[in-house]
Image 1 (cartoon, rainbow, N blue to C red):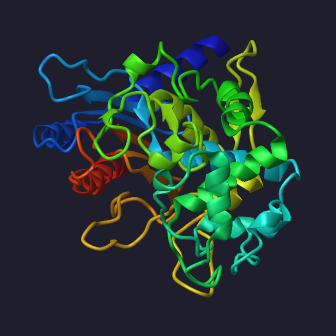
Image 2: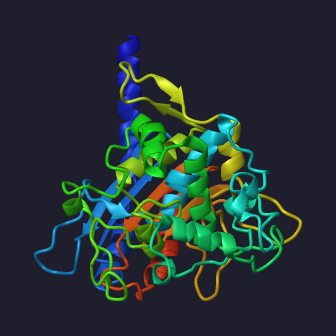
Image 3: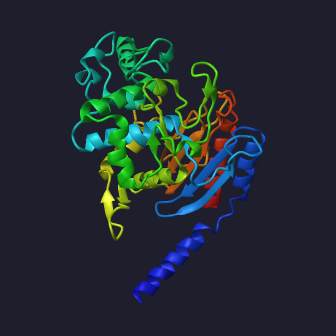
Amino acid sequence: MKKFITILIFVALFSKSYSYDFSRVDSLVNSAISQKYFPGAALIVANNQDILYEKYYGSFTYDSDSRPVDQNSLFDLASVTKVTATTPAIMLLHDKGLIDIDEFVWKYFPDFKMNGKEYITVKNLLLHNSGLPAWIPFYKTCKNKENVFDTICTLTPKFTPGSGFLYSDLNFIMLGFLVEKITGFTLDAYCNENLFKPLGMKSTTYCPDYNLKPYCLPTEFDNNWRLRQLQGEVHDEAASLLGGVSGNAGLFSGAHDLAFFMRMLLNEGKYYNPYTRGLKEEQMFKPETVRLFTQKFLTMNYDNTRAFGWDTKQPPVGRFRSQCGESISENCFGHTGYTGTSVWCDKERGIIVIFLTNRVYPSRNNEGIKNVRPDLHNLIFNILTN
């Protein structure tokens, strides 16, 4: 009898999961492809247990014979790396008592203590309020990792740390260095062993090997520095200079792997270990750590929309609307990537949206996705709540 009831519950959940009409979402994405906002995309909508909708659109390029996007396709996550590798690595170190996010960065890197950076904390790096510049063309002056680190150490903050917001890749490059300094492992090795493998994220990797490259959607033809079409090679110049492994970018992944990761966070650190018999439930992070890192950090000094590493719902920026849309609840967290990737979680409704594209193919100049993403999220949340 107990087994019969379990089967009925499963059937009920399965039926409910696929009872929504996502045809308008499909039309929106296919219209964006026809307008050449991006050639291909992957979409997964999920809750804390199931995938509610999964769809793959378009192809790797706009060519008629191009490979179609499917569940095996891998995307250059760009800045989504910040929250799927670097931020959770910091969370692990926090849980183990190996890092103090209120500590000054120079306590870990003495050379960092110069030119007004002595008051920058790990927390400032996570919140993007350190005052470090948004971006530097390291590839013009640096040859290796040591040069990049030395260059950052010589910089002067653009404002007093903690007094304002400036989204900066340099913050997360430093956090990546910090993970390596504390653990003694490279960032990719530490994340692979402690995050990706336990969660069953088998396709998530820095520096895809020869066998994986054909599954990676191409990004831009780099006619500025590398002078070649990029495919299975990180798009971000700083991450490329760092050997493809950086705290700000470099990770490649697919929609399914990201669903495993986001579901674990939605479940406050709980996940099922795929390598144990009987689907044993385990805890990746302490629940209080997940709550600490995924809630908007309230500050008295300026109007902040950031959590630790993550973004939250924000007002329009310039001519573009908030990329998570207007229908998502205030109790949410997410992030976007420059190449056209995004992950968002509405904690109040228990809904995850993963939308991956290669909008920088063949050029980064196309920003049409910024008009598509808000409508996509609004449609999805309206479908699921109405």
